[in-house]
Amino acid sequence: MKNIKLLNKIAACGTEEFDPAAYTVGEDISAPQAIMVRSAAMHDMEFGSELEAIARAGAGVNNIPVDTCADKGIVVFNTPGANANGVKELAIAALLLASRNIVDGINWAGTLETDVAKSVEKGKSKFAGCEIKGKTLGVIGLGAIGGLANAAREMGMNVIGCDPFMTVNAAWKLSRGVKSAATYEDIYKSADYITLHVPATPQTKNMISAQTLAMMKDGVKIINLSRADLVCADDVKAAIASGK
Image 1 (spheres, rainbow, N blue to C red):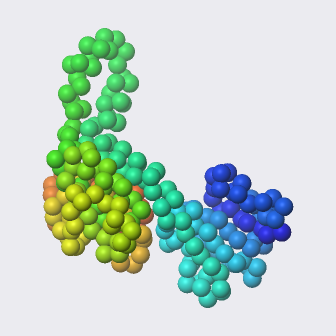
Image 2: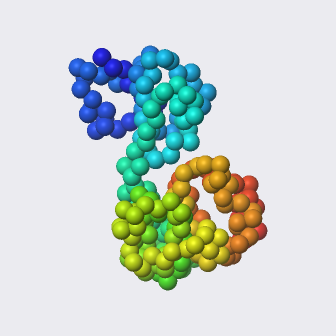
Image 3: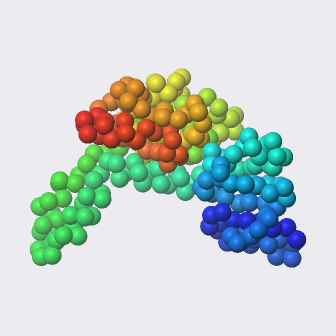
């Protein structure tokens, strides 16, 4: 019998794949041979000698002490692309939310009590925002989420992408209308919207900072559905306050 410890909630459609006659799966597991994790931080965890493998239900492994695991002979693997469609849909939603004042409009509509239809007709122009058609979207990271670039093209956006590590297989799936940017700086300088889809590494930490924000257009919209470490939050707050 193998013991598999869950550090986060894992969908039943995944855990039910394990034969209960051969595996015990749950959160209250001691001395596990395997661990399944999503975002839980593992860098300060102690690993028993019986631990053989850690599975990351997602792409990034920055929450796992990979070097320590390598020294101990613990196999670490991820599941790139497993949630790619979900992230693509959320990124599209974020594009629209960043453009059309939808949230403010909903909140305002919730305050209306009388003559609602008349009030909406009179006040809705305050929440019009702008269309994304014809705007330029810069996609940084074109792996499993590359479908976002294709969807943005279908919505009439100009799309440029940069991914120094893109595979041939990922390239085959991209629309021929997606333009290639030689560097991230090319995207920073030309995009109206920038969406980040890269792992958290020492090289990508704070890739959105005061220095890179200064290269961008005024009013640029930035979407980060990857890792918080990609963005220097204080620099973004300052840019928002300044109107950048």
